[in-house]
Amino acid sequence: MNILLVCASGMSTSLLVSKMEKSAQEQVKDYTIWAVSGDSVQSHIDKADVLLIGPKVRYMLQQLKKLGESKGVPVDVI
Image (cartoon, rainbow, N blue to C red; front, side, top):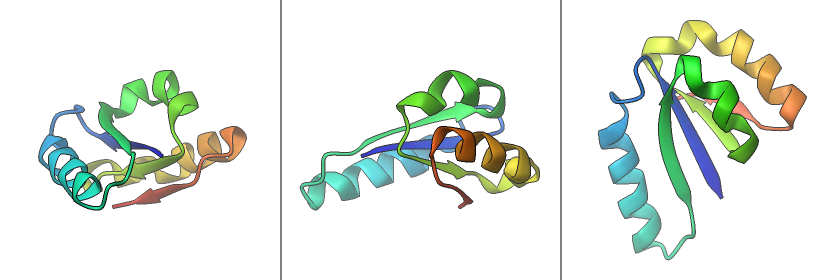
């Protein structure tokens, strides 16, 4: 599973990415998890199975939901 996280700059979710990767490893799950800025989503969404939006950019929810629907990718706010 490929999990894409979106935040304001692509860096504020790095701690969350680390914790999610550790949890996936402990559960022997094959997940790829990465974070990008809101401006970079379109370049990454084709590789994602799910898109999670950080609280600071929740104002982008409607825009990213439309993008996700067009790509078949579920979108929600963390």
